[in-house]
Length: 602
Image 1 (spheres, rainbow, N blue to C red):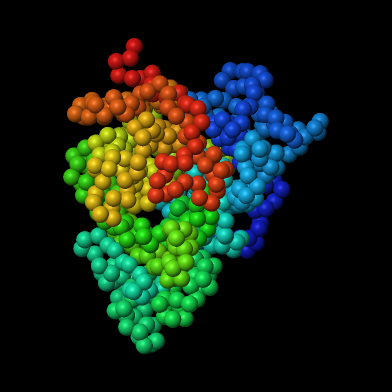
Image 2 (cartoon, rainbow, N blue to C red; image 1 turned 90 degrees about the vertical axis):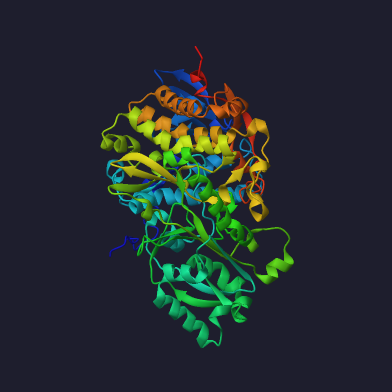
C-alpha cells in the first residue's frame, strides 16, 4: 500500500516572495474581516457600487483600501487581491505581521500576549505558504476525493480565528512530519505505564487486553510483553499507552526521565501501523488499518489559545460520558430518525507524574503531558456507496479561489435548496433536539463533524470530540458521579448562543457567503432554509413549545460573542475549560438572519 509522503527535500521551499505575498494578502483580508466583525476595527466606506463598497481603514502607520461586501451577521467579504496599502505617500506591500504590530493598541494586545501572537501569525503564514506551494487537488476534484485526501487537502483551519495554525513548538521538520496538510504517514510510539500511576477506563464490554489485541495484534502485544519481561518486569503490572512521537522526543524523554529510569514508564518501541494526523493535529488516523480506532494523544504545543495536552483526570471519565450519550442517542426516536450518532471514545488512559502531582495545584499543562484515548473509526458506519467527508470541507476554497461546496452540490444532481434541506435535517435538526429536549450542547464546528455522503448527498452526521466538548446546561439532567463535570452553568439569556454563535455565526455565516458568491444562491434563500429547518422541528415537537419560547431562536438580535478577542486577551489559556461560559467576550449584538422568518410573522 502506498501512502502520501512529504515530497520536498527542501523544507523551506515554500518561503518565496511570491507565495509569501499571497499568504499575507489572504491572512490580512481575513484579519480585517474578522476583527471588523468583532468590532475591533471600523473600516469606513468611501464609495459604493452595486453590492460592493470601497472601504478605508487607517492604522497609526498605514492606510488600507479594499473593496468589500457586507452580508448577514455582519460578515465581511474582502477581495484580498485588491487590498492596497500606503505608508505615508508611498504604496507598500500588505504585510500581516506589520498589520498586527500597527493595530496592537486597537486589538488590545498586551506586551505579554503580543510576542506569542506574532509567533502564531508567523506560523499561520508559514503553513499558508506551504499549502499554496504544494500541488493540491482543485476544489471540483477534491469534492469527490476520499476521506484522507480531504483531511490533508484542507487549507484554512478554523474559519473565525485569524491565528488558527500557530502550533507553537513545532520545528520546520516537525511541521513536515506532523501537520495534517503534509499528509505524511508515520508510526507512533508506545510506552508501558505502571498501574500504580496510570488509570485505564473503558466502556462496558471492552478491557485493556481486548483493546490491545484489536489495536496492535497478537504479535505486537507479545513483542511489547517481551520487552518488559527482558527487564525483569511483569507485564501484568503495566498498561500500554500510545504516545505522539513529537511528545516523546520534545517532552517525555527528558521531563519524565525519572519515571523512565525507575521503570514507572518503559519504552516499548514503535507501532507497526502507520498513522496520519487529522485536522485536529493531535488525533491520528490508522492508515494501515482504517477499521482500527483513532488515537488521540497529548501534544504539548500551543495552538489557538490552548496547550494541546490531555488531562488524565478528564480521561478517567471519558468512556463513561460517551457510553451515557450513546445510549441517550440510540433511545431517542428523533435522533435515530436523523441518523445522528457519535464516534465513541471507547477507552482512555492517563498517567499522573508524581513530581508534578505533588508540586502543582490545579490541572495545568504540566499535568496533561501523558494521556491518550481511543475513538471509534467511522469506516464501520458506511453503507454501500457511501463515503466520509469532514464538514470543514464545506467551507474549503482552493488556491484559485474556487469553493468546494458548489461542486459537491452539482455532483449530487440536486438543487441547492434540496441539498441544503438534506444537510440541515442531518446536522441542524439533531443539534436542536439535543438542546431543547435534553439541554445538551456540543462544539459543533466543521472539524468536529463527519458527514456521511450518499452519492454526494448528505445522509447523516457523526459527532466527535465528545467528552472534552460536551456540556449540559441544566444540572437536573447531569449524570451522577464523576460525569457531573459535563454540567456547565450558563445563564438563561445566553443559552441560545450555543446555537446562534457556534452554528450560525461560526459556521453558517461562511457557508452562506460561499453560496451567495459562488453558488448562485442568495444568502436570503440560505437563511430561509435554516429557518425552515427550525420551523419543521418545532412543529414536530409541540411538547417543547415552552422551551422554544424561553430560548427563542427567532429573536431579532443576539449577543455578539467574539472568539478572536478571547485569543487576543490570553493566547495561552483562552477560557477556563471547566467553566467555558465564564470569561467569554461579548461586544454588541448581531441581527438574527432568521428573525424575519418567525412562524406567524407577516
